[in-house]
Image (cartoon, rainbow, N blue to C red; front, side, top):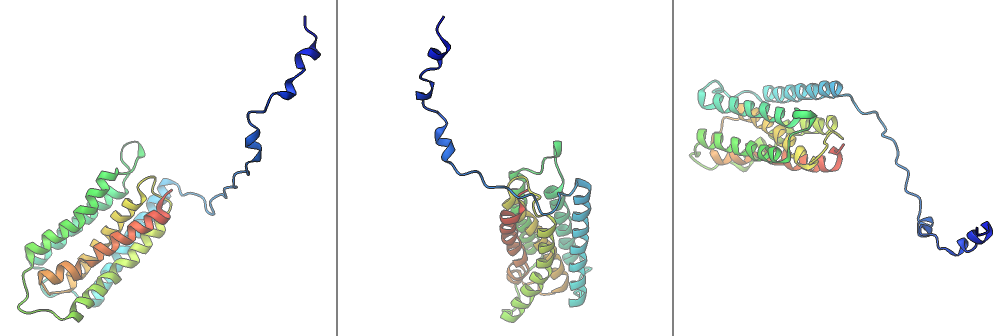
Length: 226
């Protein structure tokens, strides 16, 4: 039998296959989250509270601005009801977990982001006509400012409540929430402004939807991923 010394002789000459790993810098330490993650019931309560606060904000600003005199007519009430229904269904789709607790898929979110402006424009075109004369730029800017004022606080509240909540496609989920916040503002401004010029309604009243979708997408991409 070979001597043990003879068997071990030459082992030091064998190169270490992992020697190159010793020169690597150690991985950076990952800091723990500054705040603990919410449980699902707590998050649902927070989201429900945010929805109620956002709705109250839109209603308050609409009441301060004043409701239009013909708000009860079918030509005005039906689009408002349809937009409110679309907003409610959209929130259910965007925020309610599907089977096995998974969120809505990307295709569903993309369809929702497209359906919100499409539903708004369809109802606006069907119930609005052309003004007898061009409206002043100040009238367009006034309605745009009121609409943005109605949309931005609920959008900021949604960004705070839903931060680090999106498991996938955070930009699309943020865009969907932002578009729905904009649609809520559209309901408010449409309940106030009695100018039914289709160009005014489509651009001045519809601006919060576009702004909400863009800002929501940016916020989701930056702070939405879980």
